[in-house]
Image (cartoon, rainbow, N blue to C red):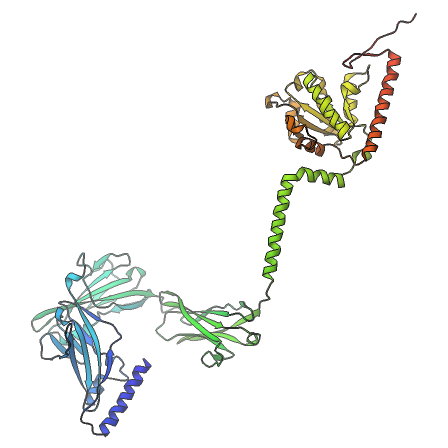
Length: 610
């Protein structure tokens, strides 16, 4: 724009020099084709072309140029032709009015390149524009509402809840040439696509003469408005249609001073030396017909005043709503240095109503060893995963190792005689499993002292008292479960009840369930059903459990007392207990004449004294 004005000023000076030189012929400066784009007109409607030379009245004004002896001439280059043709003003269809060329009406052959030339004896300037006449059959129209329109759409912003008078573009110029007052028909296409012809459905919009008056503006009144102007000229009925995009803006009663949204007053920008730094500034400009500006200053100087090319800014629009615009300005600093940390950075906004500035606080961001932290975290996670897998697979072994190192030997804290008391069903199969498997491994391999009622009980005692005594002198009660456990009389049940009662009362006795054979839930006795949640259950799996390293024996060792003595000491202690038991049994047999059968069931024999 500035280049255009400077060029025109230059031409004026050239014209003065030329006039002083008394040149008989003048050179015409050609501005080329106008950048405003192609003017479109609908065939059969009124259209006009405005000379772009008068788009800046400060340079070219029609009245001043006429007084200076300049004349405006129009030329047309039809499509498909190479030679310009002058336009005669005496045509009934084509006419000139001040800086405009009127087509009343436009025809299809009017399409082409039009040139307006402003010249006098000493100077000349010309510029071209393109006209396109659209045929009506080229416009797809489903109905008469809205009417077809070829011209570009203008825009109007109306304050919300305010009043406004909407005029049809070009109406005032037509009124001067019309033989009678023109008539205007209004149409409204809502944002939802519905089309209405005046009169509308409400009283807030009324037609006043040829204008449309808004008494109160609401959001529902937004949309496209079409105005069709009809008038008489030289016995012909002429018309044209224009479209206006109507939008609402915030009321004028609201504050219109600009404000800074970012950075907030407590915002601190972390920066790193040697890196690119971007400082963000966002400003809110309320709807107002005035110039606005958002910019950065560094140490009180704008970026244009700085000699340091490392500083640049990027401006963009973030949001536009009802006339209020949110603009963003990014201050980009390349290769940020330690000296830049001491500078003062201010973001400012301004319009005709006010001004605001805000300082950006910078703080050097201490770089963390991200690679080292990432590697350390990765190694930690891998180790945790490995430990989880190892514990999940070898938790029994780890628990046994922990117990062997840190577990306490219960023999040093109590005065009980036996480590394990075995309770089982009195049948051949269970007895074979107890005597040949459990007892053998527990006593010979693991070094536990085992109490078996049928083996260790003394003759002549009461079964109930002996059972209660054995259970009370044991640290664990091992219950071997099988389908016949609860059906073999009261001996097994008595042992189970004694173990559960001792476990509940004293707390130094624990009951361990060994499932020798599968037992259905219905086959469990009431005592087992009640105490099942608190009792450990170890399952015997046949040949898979026969090895000492099997899961069965590891699981059983976890539930048994911790033994932290050497094997030799365990052997000597076992031999001592066995000798004491045999000595006590022999002493009793010699006094009562006890005879033991092959199954080791005691029978009392009384001697007859002579």
